Amino acid sequence: MLAPITPLAQRQPIEPPQPLTRFVGREVEVAAACALLRRNDVRLVTLTGPGGIGKTRLGLAVAANLRGHFEGGIAWVPLAAIRDPALVLPAIAQSLGIAASHPASLVDHILSAVHDRRLLLIDNVEQVVAAAPDIAGILAACPTLTVLATSREPLRISGERVLQVSPLTLPDPSDAGTVERLVESEAVRLFADRAEAAASTFELDAASAPVVAEICTRLHGLPLAIELAAARVYHLSLDSLLARLESRLPLLTGGPRDVPERHRTMHDAITWSYDLLSPEQQALFRQLAVFIGGFTLEAVENIRGDGGTVLDDLRALVDKSLVQHGPDARGGSRYAQLELVKEYAAERLAMAGEEAAVRRRHAAFFLELPGAARRELTADAVAAWA
Image (cartoon, rainbow, N blue to C red; front, side, top):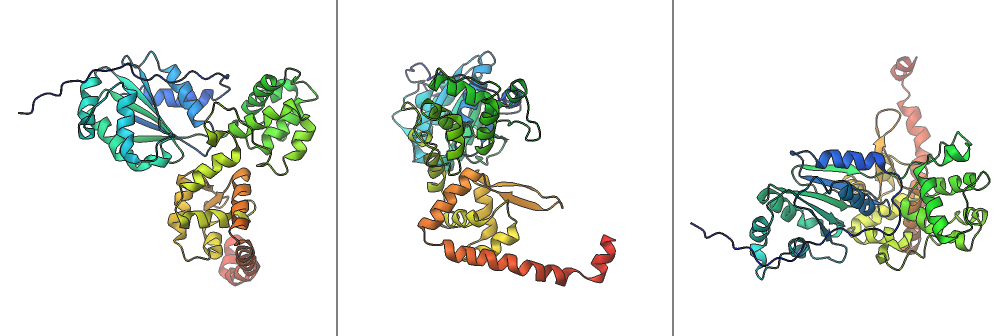
């Protein structure tokens, strides 16, 4: 019979940080995540979405709302600085206040240290997603442990519940709206909050609110992009800021010095995701920049010029939150990229010297479409449409 593991001397667990700025909106997402994490049959919830969508901030808000639910407390596991998946378990142990000299015994020591219900908030998993089986292992070994993870892609382990984090709500484009109506938008409220912090003279009123609404719409409700743009009101008028958003990435820089480098510019936020792609996935990501208004799998297969496996690579880009996927009007599948992401992809396409060749294949495919449509327009098809 094995001798029981003697718990090592423990320090206090590392608690989630307290943000210095106000959390805006996301009531629906917070409620959904909290409802899942309060369930006894849910042990792992992963918040996914592209860089700059606000996964970490949402995770912190969810954790703050659950403090009274987990009697063992909440431990913070930041993984942004880790690139080796083998270091994830030691990072979890350290966050729990556990030190072990033999990595092989870490799960046993974690098990011996976790008695009451405890939540682990594991932030930034995407670059060490190969450690997902280790996270599954500690969940299986520690029945009182629950994990809330943030990642640009799902962990894909048993029992995972994935919550896709969407952009902040935007004003209704068909409604010019009063200030009162426009501030119902989460994006407008976030811009106003951060703009007031950057420039004490900023005021959201009848004159400024429509311009702020248009700025937020141009930025697709992405929180990081909105915060970076709002900081510019210190030295740019709203009209000037809006005009400069024709080319977004060069403007969206200058984030706070106390945030990770990847969150100081929108360009760096996307680069973080791009660098995690395989060479084949990077090539496809660049080539997608030629599409306007979305694309189908068939269209991608026709512009792909390197013989790669389109379906697998396109699925990887969806999983990694660099491409969005949904049904089209006819019940098929359609894909799209956020404009900021597409702007970055176009920059990479030009840098790679591939733009002319990809655009030729793109043009050839769409020039062939009318002929293909005529060939498909049989008498039976006409009768079916009648």
